[in-house]
Amino acid sequence: MQTRDAQPTPLALAGVRVVEMGQLIAGPFCGKTLAEFGADVVKIEPPGSGDPLRNWRMIQNGTSVWWQVQSRNKRSLALDLRQREGQDIARKLIAEADVLIENFRPGTLEGWGMSPEELHALNPGLVMLRISGYGQTGPYRDMPGFGVVGEAMGGLRQLTGEPGRVPVRCGISIGDTLAALHGAIGVLTALYHRKVNGGQGQVIDVALHEAVFNCMESLIPEYSAFGAVREAAGSALPGIAPSNAYACTDGWVLVAGNGDSIFKRLMATIARDDLANAPDLADNAGRVARVAEIDAAIGAWTAGRTVQQVLDLLGAARVPAGKVYTARDIAEDPHYRARGMLLQQTTRDGDTVTVPGVVPKLSATPGRIRSSAPKLGDDTDAVLAEAGLTNEQIALLRSKGVIA
Image 1 (tube, rainbow, N blue to C red):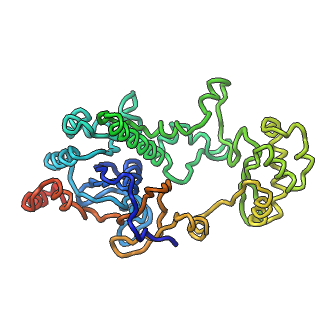
Image 2: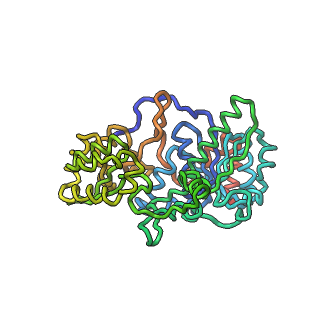
């Protein structure tokens, strides 16, 4: 099992100051990504309750283990943004920040006197990331939108599941995460423009459904050119053959034999030279026309073998194949360990939990875990002191319930 770096390494985003106002997944995942590469991320949370993610899914010593991943490397400022004094403090922090992340419903910041125009008047270089269900403009902008809705509107849910059955989710909040990653790309692009091109700060408008839609490959071009509406296809990859999941004696194996030479090696391995040498199966178009027959041949071969036997034989033939990993498989996999993707993280309560490593991997300035996820308000006093508030001012704000 990997541990945190023993020696400090350069951090690409060291010196970048981020104020994170988001909660739950989309905004905070972007903040997490920036923090892993050195950005100083101050997370603003409501006093008393904090980010709802603290209490989502499985809880250890009163805190979600999901929180331990999503909020590592961040500092927690418990600040009530509904109070005018809280908004004044937020503006003070934003005035000195490089990046602001928020994923409230459009209009929320404007109602607090923190519109892009007002914030850029305070800080012309501010890069402002705004993640919302439908974006900051358009007829749907004021509608509430979560990742699940974005996945549906973006076209993803139509393709998940078995043909003719209820659309299913992919098992994680992929819409939120895709929006967060698009947001991180936008932030880094805007920071580069500001630094290299002498540009000012700007607003990055990320809609959940647009982030999903951006990853939908040829969905719309196929409809535009052919009137084709892609439908759910279960475990198969429509229009690419063979690429599917096949039953073994003890589970399922995924086989991607859709390259021309790969297909020949796959058919030779399953003793189907007739298919390997069929002239009409020499390219993908021909294989798509006979995909049911090809899938049946592969399925008949895997049905009498274990997953490991199939993987060994296809690995020897250089045919891409893999098993369906569970959490246990990942935790026990030597490749995950060798790649530093399973790290030991000690929580603020002293527990040890295994967490995902940092992605992507940079050779010269790799990201790392510098600190565990904070308890609510752990850094309130320190952040406010850095902003120039005295101990007396901090104590007064705490007595009013503005901070905690």
